[in-house]
Amino acid sequence: MSITFRAQANGFPVDSCFVPFTFPGGERHFKDSGTGAEQNEHCIIRGADANDYVAAKMWAEMVHAAGGVATAYIPYLPGARADRGLPFGAKAYAGLINDIGADHVICFDPHSPVMPALINNLQIIDSTRLVRRAVGGYDTTYTGIIAPDKGAAVRAGHAAHALHLPLYTATKDRVEATGSLSNFQCPDLPADGKYLVVDDIADGGGTFRGLAAATGLPREQLGLFVSHGIFSGAAADLNDSYGEIITTDSHPGAYNPDVAARVIPVIPYMIGTH
Image 1 (cartoon, one colour):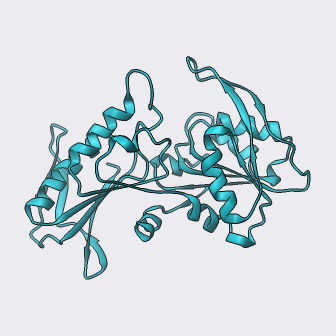
Image 2 (spheres, rainbow, N blue to C red):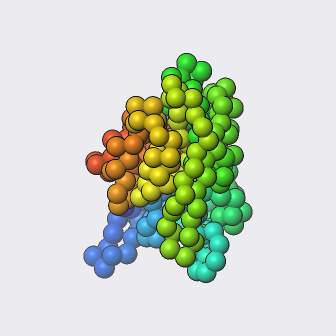
């Protein structure tokens, strides 16, 4: 399971009194520990296992029956990249989230506005302050921010503004039918600079490897911040292109041992900003 259940008691986090377990047949279920339910309960879901959303639905039912408030922290929205065409994956996963029946749903840096528009009671926490904190704030050694494509320009632009650094927007070509990438281009960069690439998701890492090659810079002059590190396939090759890789623990893939990433706990940040 990539889901945990917690509560707040007198301002301190404690385990939920509703304890999950799995029947021999594979079904998720809960038992009441008898310690007494708190008024403010929350669950944290990482990843895309549909069973976790079924468990969250049962947990929320128990919380509400006890008169409590159920908050679901879902930092990585599963299916958010499937925001067009058929099947409409973003809508399918949004349905699972809505079926939880949570009083509040908190997510972190969603891929696009499409899926958030489909989710009830949603609050979005963006990545700007976390990026600034992760690289040392105004004392950062970076001298510029790079958006890997036009789709990332707003997100990277917010980071650049927060750090008082220039923004450079790269481009690439993608064949939608196959997902293949080509023709990476990056604006001319001062040769003595150090640049942070900012985006939401690193999966296999092809976009970021192609971008790094297009800059013509050595790994020591490039860093990568991604809100969600899935780090599948050839993602370990990012180590050859970037001297620093930073992500959060929003997705279980962040801890891929072959990727030398610094992983930042995202839930304390989300709790502090919502």
